Length: 587
Image (cartoon, rainbow, N blue to C red; front, side, top):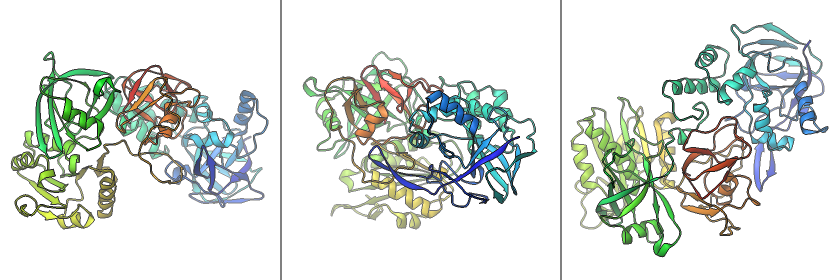
C-alpha cells in the first residue's frame, strides 16, 4: 500500500551561493497536521522560479522514500530529511518505474493526476550539497514526478494513496524521462508519448521537436533540449577566403567581399546569419576572433561582411589598416539562429547603426524572391555620414511591391533634408512604432546596440506583439539565462582577475574576450565565462538540460561529468566541459 509520509512546504527565500544571491523555494519543511491543496500550490508553499517550476501541471512535486534510501547508500549519507529534494510529498511506494503519466490518485480529500517527471536544476544540488545531483537524479531513472490537482482538498502525513484511474496505453515516469534525456529517441515511442493526453505542454513540445528532427536528422544532438541559439550547429574550423573587394559604406563602416581561394562553393548562409573571422594581431600579436553578420544576399560564390570601425576597436582597426584586396582571411562557416523565417505574413526589419547588416541580408533575400509580403524597413542612424547602405536599401525597397522604408536621424547635419535623406528626427521608440502603425501580427527582426534592443523589445511587447514574433540578434553575446539568480549590476565582458597567461586559450568570439584556462581554479568552461562576465545560459550545470549548449567554432574539449546526451557535432556544453587545446566558442 502506498502512503503519504510527509507533506513539505516552504516559501521562496534568498540564499548566498558562489558569491551570488539565489531566490529559491527548494527549502521545504514538514507540515504538522493537515494541509490544504489548491490548483497551483499547497498552503504555505511557493516557487522562486515560475519559469521552471510551479503552474497547473507542476503544482505538487512527489519523491519516494525508496529513492532517499538509494541516495543515502550511493552517497554514503545519513543526513537527509523529508523535503531534502524539494518535494511537497514524501511518499512510500509508487516508484518511477511503475507510475504512468495520466495515472490518477486520491490522497485525503484531494484528487491528483501525474503529468511529467521532474526537470532537475542546479538548486537541488545546492539543497543536497551535491553539485552532481541534477545529473544523478535524471541519469538514474529516479527523477520523481509532478501532480496536477484535479480536485482541491486536504492531505496529511499518514494518508493512504489510492489509485483511482489508470492511463490508457500509459508510459512510466522512468520511460518518459529516458525518452527525452537519453541518446535513444525511437520514433514509435515519441509518437506514443505525444498521444498521452495528461502529458504537460513543456514535455510535449520537446517530444514534438524530437519528432521533427527525426524527419530532418542532423549530426547528433538532442533537438528536444537544445536552445534556439545553438539549434543549427555547423562544422567547426576555419576556411581560407580571399578578399576581392573593400568598400566604404559610411564614415565608419567598411565592407569586405570574400571568395574561395580555390573556387570551391561556399556554404550557403541563411539570411541574417554571421561568420567568425580569425585575425592575426599586428606584429604577430594574439589572435583576434570577431563575429560579423553577412550583409548581402546569401550566395555560394561569395560572402560580404560589413565592419564598424571603432576608435578603440582592435579588430576593426586591424581590418581598416591591414586588410586589402588579395589578402587571405580565416573565416568560419555561417552560424546563428537569427535568420528570416518562411511565411506569408508581414516582415518588419528594425535596426540601428551597424545593426543594419543582418536585416539587410534579409531584405536582399525578400527582394531577390520578389516577395509579395508586406515589408517595413525601420532604421536609426546619427546622420547621413553615418548611415550605411542608404542607396542599397532604397533600390531593394523599390523592388518590393508592398514595402515601406522609415529612416530616423538623431543628429542630422544642417545640409540634410527631411523627406530626402531621412524621414524624421529622433531615436526609435515606442511612440515611433505607434506612429508608424507597424503590423502587430508580423515577424519583427531587431538588431543594434544592447540598450536599443532592450528598449525595442519592451516597446513591441507593449504594442501587443507576441514573443514568438520578436527575433533578436545581439552582437556582443546572447541573452543570458541564469534562473533564480538575483539581478546585479551588469558588467561588460573582461579578463578574469587571475588570468595567468598559461594554459589553453579560451576565446569567447561574440564577447570579444580571450582568457586562459586554469584547471585548478575552474571546473568548467562555464565557470571561466562567469569569471569574465560573459553572458551565459545554464540551468542544471551538470550536463543534463542543454541550456548551456553553444557553438564550438574551433578546438576540442573533454567532459567531466559526461553529459547524458552529447551535444550535436560542432557544439559543446560549457557547464561540464574542459578544453583540450585552445578553443573558440560562439558566445
